[in-house]
Image (cartoon, rainbow, N blue to C red):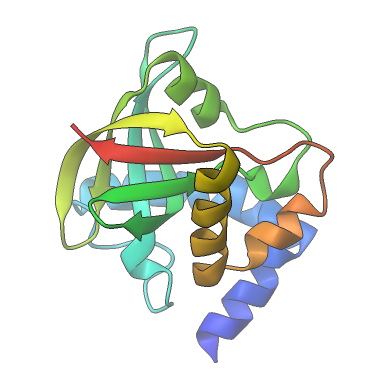
Length: 157
């Protein structure tokens, strides 16, 4: 029941805002301090797929930590640049486009290094379907924006 409540809340505009502006800053610290063991999603079905993306700022070159929901795909991970359906792509998307080398801190797996690339065509469609099977809120977010939400694949280095 708790999972359904959280999932329903996140799909709302207010819930999306809260996760982007309240829970993500908390998770950035919690995930780093606890090596991925504790986050605000603990106790939900999302906990094992909450990751901390380590990337490099596109313009600044500064290291950035970004908590995200990711979908495992074999040894790779799918990231959906939804920004809860905002009109603009999230900053981490531009960071990965400029500097594709990144890391993911994953609960129970630790931190690993990856190379990111944007998916298109049939590959994008399969990854989008896999991510939506895990969390169908991405479809809700796509309905809020005119932009086509980017799908990134992080492959092990």
